Length: 191
View: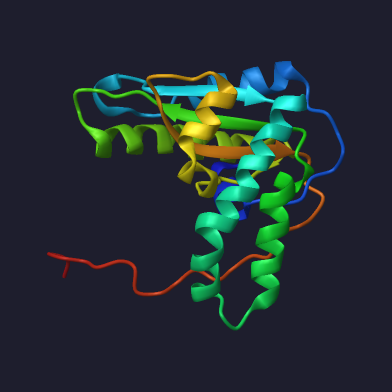
């Protein structure tokens, strides 16, 4: 698979088959994802890979995050598309039945929060592209991050900032391909 194909065809997957993913495969993909660029090469990412009972506790927090934070925004953005709101709610209530969830954290660096976030985001994008290349899928979730203290307590993480949750598994759907928006590039100094 060429990189261009992965970039164009990778989608957020929100429904997964009941298929376990070998730990060795996740180790390989996480190690590759960490070849991302980072501010001053601080490599300030930190991953917690969760399954089993602990994953169930993450789902409970995800449900609360939907009700307390996400549903209001969805109702505003998709006011004429009730099915999108309902499908999103189902996803937050089940995490798409993903066999595992990768919780992505960042540590603070001297560069500051903006650089810290961007560095970890680069590793997340690498991971999502690698998942796609392997026939797997994931969804970059920021909604549950609204309840970081609850998630940190479940995971036993301290002194790090939660940036995303990524449910991972074998896709059970082929997601819709939205059109790219026009007018997102401006050229200055070009004849």
